[in-house]
Length: 398
Image (cartoon, rainbow, N blue to C red):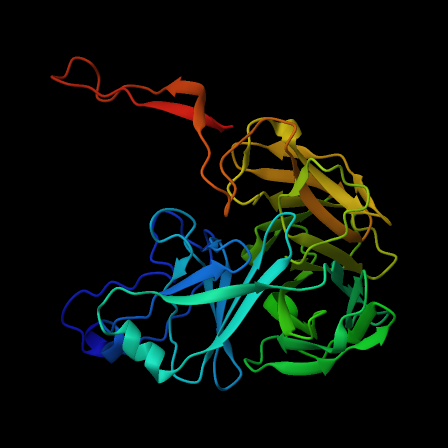
């Protein structure tokens, strides 16, 4: 602080200013560029609204695309409370674009892209407490998509995606892979299948935007996280998506590539009672004939629904239809695990016929009934003038 000329303490908050639901994983690395003149400047508050339901888009992922074609990840909009669906973007200036993407369970992918103008900045700094409303538009046309990143024979990365029907116009990729600038790649199309070789870059933590036009001929984008991981014989972590990969004995793969997508997937083989509980995970290894043999761990994110029993969660693999695989569940930590020996698509699902609790984002509030309770250890001990005995209730939403 002294080197920057600061003489008093300054508090720098996260993208959604919510200390109870932070959007950063433990051990995440953050780079700060601080402009001292802007530390105390008011930042605009954006409220993301789902146009289809007229409800706040809680948990929407937000990024800021700078005029120079770089982008800054902002995290997610607030999940609960009066600020639900809101976010305070960092580092926005006139001419920048704000992108928000939201994939809901059994719903179409919703997205928004708006350009920052001076009038919006002025409105936000007027101190009136008004939030700038951004409407998330659903993709029209009931599309499904299975996008993935795989290796070619020499270890280069390839993008491919299979849709249930062709999108309108030309599909493209915007790629941010270590250079800071977005690279543009036109995708080859054969029927409803898309593909292209990825340009050179640092794919250890990259973001791809799949861009196409829907059935109403309106362009949309789909953000995909891509992580290239060397097999170092220890747990490999994809921090942005809470995915963990642990190579096991006998694994001969030199590298793994993990990609995730929030876009709706085909429902073939799925009972109507299942709801997505994670993003779509694509996993491939190099060389192609290598033994993958790794433990895949997926953190469950099923809106605000939570499983009360482990049997409510299962991982499925796509094989011309979804097939359940052996799944181990750590319920307290919300992690589902399976041993992976074949490349392909994996996804966690929540079975609503089992015991679950919570309320779905975007749904009308339901009546919550006590479903269980726990009496905690009292503190301090009862020989003191007073003591507290916390009691907690598990609520089942009917």
